[in-house]
Amino acid sequence: MPLLKRLNQTLIGLFIFLLPWQTAYIFNSQNINGAKWQYGSGLIFVTEILLWLIAILQLACLIRTKNQEFKVKNSRFAITVAWWLLLAWSGLSLIWAPIKTAGFYNWFHLLEAAGLFFIILVSTIDKKKIYLALTLAGVLQALLAIWQFLSQGISANKWLGITGHLPWQAGEIVIESSGRWLRAYGSFPHPNILGGFLVICFFATIIPALRVSGGRNTPWRIIATLLILTGIFFSFSRSAWLALAVGLLIIFIQEILRSQKSVEPAKIKYRNLAKYFFAPFILSIILFFIYQPLILTRAFTTDRLEAKSVSERLSYLSQAKDIIKNHWLIGVGEGNYTYALYQKNPLLPAWSYQPVHNIFILIFAELGIVGLAIFILFFASCLLYFVLDICKKNRAELNLLAFPAAIIVIGCFDHYLWTSYFGIILLFLTLALILKKPLLDQDN
Image (cartoon, rainbow, N blue to C red; front, side, top):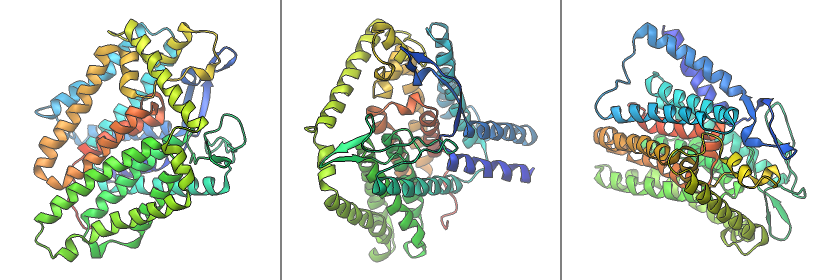
């Protein structure tokens, strides 16, 4: 049994490390007006297979050991109820969804994400290993992002799930400032997804590092932090930048308050703060001065492409308002938002039917006010349990609030946390990470 547990722990870490790679088999490609309908097509990702293997092994461990770690009682009761309600209501919405296959694909990914959430909470995996897997995955993605931006080209590789991109091609995600600058994608289909993932990886790197006495921190931690920060920068994702800033502010305030209560000499108390805040700050200043025109273009929306992006996002909000107005109670059905747009205006090209860039509004449109209330109940229950139970026992854990804060910020400006397999997995993985028992060994 210890061997089985160790194997499952290793596979969970491997799954998290491989999660960014988008290698998938398309088994049901759907078209709208002669072009591929991305949000209605069926895909099987390689990491999904690994996830189901992990689920089987975890089930075997539970049966053999009768693990009772995740008991349905007290403060966790609301989480469990909301967890089941979200799965049940989103599954029930397939009854009234116009395209049931598209809805089922999304619901199945939600089921997998909820399963991962449960697995992480009941498994014996140390949270340090989850942090390490995210750090390694983040460093690899950051290195790839740095190479992509500096070379201004991305080569396609079907085995790694990477699509080719060149700055001069139409439809690419670029910045127009004295030419066309290709934003870094990493292994993802969009730079914003790269930026959001790297923000989570950044926090997974810096938070455990701040727990270790400054003198015992190894150089690789700071190197990893700076590499991931550079990857976030080259994604040029405004939502990722904002999420990073909000999360860092939470961590900084918490660490300052914790350091003031420490009896250690000031030189030791603030050593980690100096390393993990001052070094990234200096790097950010350097990158700002080197790429100031690109940053200013992204910051101000007077440029043609930036103005177009803002205009499109506003139009998506208007579209969502119309759909919610007519389906406010139960929604249009899981995964059927873009098809509902097609039904309202069936003459547009397939790529123009885009989800609203806000997961809360999107959930409202797909699952109605009932589904939105359930989702908020689940999210709020996780936060409430974290603050009242975990932080009550160890106030140092409060810096983990950077994770849900980043998720909320990203969710307010992007839709991939609800519309993609990777996004919904990342959402539930992040929530599971803050609920997992705190680290006991401080000398990692």
